Image (cartoon, rainbow, N blue to C red; front, side, top):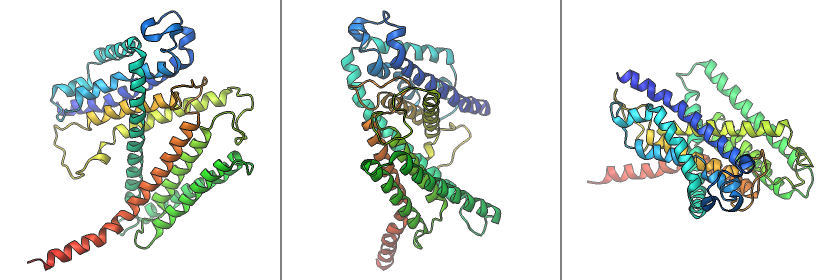
Length: 381
């Protein structure tokens, strides 16, 4: 019985991932095409004249944000597979799909003032989501490095693979830095991009030096993965700069949307959906006690954490679709474009590097304090 319930619980994650994907595609469709596809179909008291408060920016904030929060409220206390809340989480799909559609429709009857308030809350929720995602990524890198760390019990072949992998990541990150200088800082007037890229290169060197320091001795694998990650964040930030900027030789001058723009848009949505999903199932990284023993009838993962991550992820997606700006509507087939988006990603990059470096030096900083405490305990009567 428990085995069957466990399988249902694990399968349910993918259904929620599909619902999350559909939610964000709907938000994009409402933003770009809602005002042309549904011109007469709106509630004027909530949507205003010509539906301006239900399409484009505010339309994104109205789309599908309620469902995952309702799922969080109804499942966060679940601990055992035999509880009723577990059956609700893993089954009753017809009823939940009806709830999903109803929550989406009801949101278009809410006055715009409440949607504006929700937008401010969504900014905070999106920031929390970014922070949790960073912790999840760094914990994954730490686990990967620990699994492949060279010691007496690890085979030589595993060590060779780890060395090869770290070399690949370092080469990729250095190529990324050189490419960014070429594509996004072609002239001296691109001073902001030069600063972003140069500071990323500095972080790259500092993380490598700290990992190889004799007191830290974490090897090159974790710092190589992290270096590639911060280079990716820097690239993503510069790509988010407004279309009228001249420091991007890859951007079409007439703003024409070709197949590469559309493909990049779809890849971005898919990547963020996968990132949300992976963070949602990674509740272990956020447990204070890592050594808790799971019983046979315990749930496989934390349902409440899973749904609140999806709820925060929906807020993050909403901010990407409106470029963190409630006043200016984004252009069609665009995601996360604007100076607000650029600075959010740059700060996210710096914060990620800071957290990683603190995790490197934290054991070294704490070790003298623990030694002093042990001496005091020994000398105490």
